[in-house]
Image (cartoon, rainbow, N blue to C red; front, top):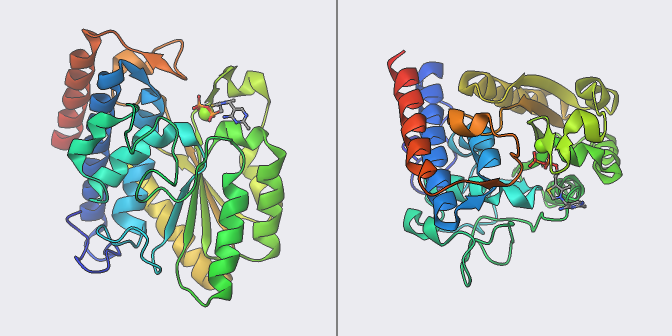
Length: 299
Ligand SMILES: Cc1ncc(C[n+]2csc(CCOP(=O)(O)OP(=O)(O)O)c2C)c(N)n1
Ligand SMILES: [Mg+2]
């Protein structure tokens, strides 16, 4: 939040690259920390995805998105669409980090009557643009929104977060064609390639590689990066914005990430899609996260 001005919270592109990267690294740490605390309340959840994608969420909210924390439905906002409803735990943590929902509310994640259900719902949560639990629909909605905003003469941008499992869905590729056909420079997709799905490794469920070549063939400006590297993320999102301005072309950023990133106990879990974590393990997770972060910060 520190880089955002108070009225219209378009993140500042000023400051050195190192400063901007540090802001993202710090936000990503807090997002991971929040996600562990949220998971601990239920003893389970999609914690691995939140840890894996924290750097992506942090980069988008701290360096790209224009929004008003106290007015989440402000018309001029950039739209962040969470296609993967089950990643909501990570998104809620990012919304709290951005000041859109209170940090104290995070502990209600997954509880009855909470505004933070386990799968993201637009009707429940401020800042949640769509209900993305039925996978493979986010990009189609994003294309429609980007088109609609352009028709309205709005400068707002649309960001769509997808998972590698969603590349199995034909609707994703129909939407990709639409984004190219309409030359939607106001649209940026990011794909969390964690090589995992509910039924096992992505390569064993449906071989989608070579992914970059596919997006390029579909007419998108495609970059593939280490999605757990804040510097690489920042550079890729900045490149995407510049490309949109110069070419009016939709962008996709393919982010290779590691499930459970930052907590070695969870990075090596065999069943990682939906994690059950024993009561005594949560504190160890927090300690491992903090130790890794302090190691990075002092490096
Ligand atoms: C249309 C649809 N089909 C199936 C499911 C059931 N489902 C929920 S999560 C998931 C895995 C999708 O892959 P991915 O998001 O890459 O999994 P992760 O990386 O989170 O393990 C599936 C198949 C669903 N929610 N929607
Ligand atoms: Mg996956």
